[in-house]
Amino acid sequence: MSAIPSSIPLRNDLLGEEPYGAPQLDVPVCLNVNENPYPLEPDVVSSIAQRVASIAAELNRYPDREHIELRQAFSDYLAKESGTRLRVEQLWGANGSNEIMLQLFQAFGGPGRTALGCDPTYSMYPEYARDTFTTWKLAHRHEDFTLDVDRTIDAINEYGPSMVLVTSPNNPTGTVLPHDEIEALLAACEQAPVTGAPEGAHPILIVDEAYVEFRDPGTPSAVSLVPKHHNLAVSRTMSKAFAFAGARVGYLAADEGIIDAVRIVRMPYHLSAVTQAAALAAFEHTDEQLSTVAHLRQTREQTASWLAQQHYHGENIRVAPSGSNFVLFGTFERRETIFQDLLDRGVLIRVVGPEGWLRVCMGTDEEMARFRQAFTEVLALHD
Ligand code: PMP
Image 1: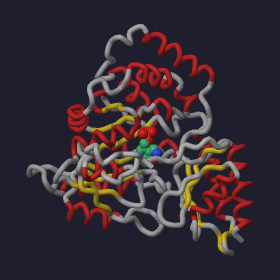
Image 2 (image 1 turned 90 degrees about the vertical axis):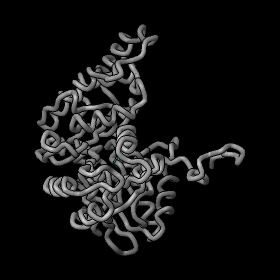
Image 3 (image 1 turned 30 degrees about the vertical axis):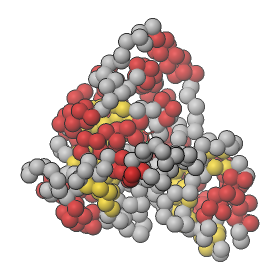
């Protein structure tokens, strides 16, 4: 609980609000915030230390505000990872993709503007909307968590949003959005007007690809559509597959016009010299940083099929198909009880998503063995 006295003039719309975030608990097995569980290799650690040491004497100066070298590294990484070469002007970095999203809301949302999301989806989006006075609307997904494209297009035409947000793979469901559906949404956005914007403006489509490196190999990323669409913004992060959550680096791939719009609202020197140096060092070891991704994909498939064979109240547990490093499973009558029983056994997962569902992130082999052991015990308690 926060302790905000009524004698300080907090914004009226924030009265009674609590800071949002997953619990940070000191437990043996943390499977709750979708990190890559494998630590960095010693040679990556020493590259980071060297890069940071090499700029340390210049920390009296502000960093490169335009972080050009890092944007070039994003370009090189995406060329390799998604087969699309973008120019530095089409790329932009920030402190996590959380900050990328906030900057997009600051540039394209605001009073009188609407943002559209497709729930169940990432729970931070309504917070960015609230913080920027943007109206938040939803087009619900199908019961199996796939996107209801017709309903979403109807909502685009009905609300005239300035921003349409889709997440692929989606958090917390893991659902992958097929490429042709992204193209259908882009086509709808290119025709639709924007409420509260000058005539001729059309919604931008934001594809949040935080978990995209976990997709099936050979599947395209929305980054490949950036060169053809001026109204597409693809948000990416180094926090998940790339195993760099602690450094806080996210990035945006989009038309130069969208990047220039974001540059208007960014804080001066938002990306510290230390962050830029650490990220550049990590990109020197891209293959190593991604070396656990195939194994984590396998862990996900094994965990999903193991969960689907377990029973709760005489029925098989449901598992949502996931293209990510986590699995949503359910449904439980009182999911908080299951969550707590697991926590009592040293395993932290997440109560998130539609009523009755729980989400578990892929850990190391040892952590997953502990999860399976704990969950087996918990199911026996509830039989
Ligand atoms: N988008 C989605 C869908 C996420 O799940 C997360 C992290 N939970 C983020 C964005 C933000 O990640 P970061 O700020 O670490 O890049």
